[in-house]
Length: 337
Length: 150
Ligand code: B12
Ligand SMILES: Nc1nc2c(ncn2[C@@H]2O[C@H](COP(=O)(O)OP(=O)(O)O)[C@@H](O)[C@H]2O)c(=O)[nH]1
Ligand SMILES: [Mg+2]
Image 1 (cartoon, chains in turn orange, purple):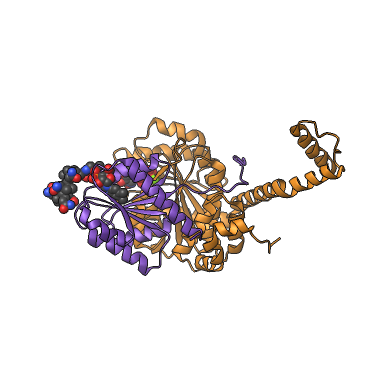
Image 2 (tube, protein in one colour; image 1 turned 60 degrees about the vertical axis):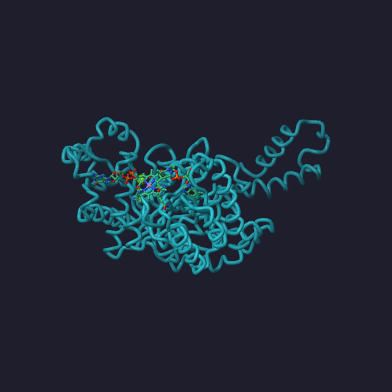
């Protein structure tokens, strides 16, 4: 199936990319930002054939990236933190790329992509690629684009990929499943909000950050989280609590160290990217199944119907739904025990 | 992960717009109004912030793969600054991102901007619907170019 051509119409739709797809893929591998950007657009457009085409041509990569998910309530300082984290890593020679997700309006589908402005100066100085993704209110769609975008950034040779999420909802948990290391960002004075967060993301986080350590109550906030963490079962990863302040570059060293130790911890147990590979397979399977069912299986069942092998012609007056249901049932009974 | 909506028909991203003030100009009320208006019209909107250079504007546009750069200046420097953005784009061979301008742009400057491919050039009092319609049209043209239907 590898040599399968895109249908003509699809080819025309992305004609410019199609003719340059080899260039695009080699551009991605050379970490050329314009190529990475266009490749991500291709996975963002919900076109299964194109996504498959580009991701397959990109293939597997020599570098194995570690994915860091940064989550926490809006306004807590995630975007600002990512600017510092990313440039701090670059200063240590650790290559990285950033994806930041913003919420779309469920009514208009529009979105204000506001994460970039908080981090762009640092990222620009350090020559880091960053891309904003709108969640478009659809969890399935977002996971797909994010999975593809991570693959592309990995293929560009990034050792670390940092993802900022919107900080709420099921889609967020899905994205967090992509991440090897989940960093939950909190700040002094959250009070009751902490209770709400505790219920979901708290359990699955690997590192806690108290941001805005310049604020009053910072040490109490750290103590609160340290108390929670002290009740963890101590057999596995010991979850660190680190403090950061946006105007103190050195304060990010503790966070970088914690992230790198978690990476090492995962590598020792051979579990780096395991979840991500599983998600990649899951989406690839879903695409394949959709493709098969909508094209091949449909064709096969229609043929069976016409040839009389399936249900016979005598049901033309039946309602089409019952015929379709019977055809599929019949097929599944034969092929799946 | 649920399949959600039907995947068989391909679905395009909404138009993506970069709003920029590529120069020393602190008048940001207009761009903030436009940012919300574009979002409410169903577009994905990035705001580059005050004072980024033309180079930064273009880098951002490329990395985010936007369809339109919407440039706003009220400081009177549009002829030089907008032109620099257009020239840099040409230099870098970028022809699938549209340039739209606006702010305090005198009528007599508009032909020169148009000649550079910078369209719109709307000033105070222009109805938002006129601006949105224009930006949407330019975004669609840029998207067509990206997809090679020139
Ligand atoms: C409010 C204002 C200020 C505020 C700005 C507050 C802020 N944060 O934005 C303050 C008081 C700070 C200010 C300061 C100055 N201002 Co002033 N200011 C104005 C004023 C009165 C209104 C601007 C405004 O906010 N309009 C409301 C918004 C919503 O409209 P808008 O910006 O025009 O945007 C609309 C359209 O133009 C269009 N549009 C705008 N951008 C774009 C982009 C695209 C792509 C598109 C399609 C459309 C589009 O759509 C928008 C929505 O309808 C104008 C006069 C005027 N009537 O325009 C002078 C004006 C812009 N200022 C002027 C000047 C000279 C200054 C100062 C240099 C000093 C001074 N004399 O006051 C300083 C410089 C500030 C700086 N650092 O750059 C002059 C500029 C002259 C020129 N172009 O040659 C003006 C024209 C006044 C004048 N007649 O002299 N100013
Ligand atoms: N005092 C203080 N403010 C911060 C710090 N980090 C971020 N902020 C501010 O918090 C606000 C929200 O930051 P942002 O990064 O956009 O948060 P996000 O919504 O979680 O991505 C901005 O005004 C930042 O300047 C910090 O360490 N200390
Ligand atoms: Mg943010």
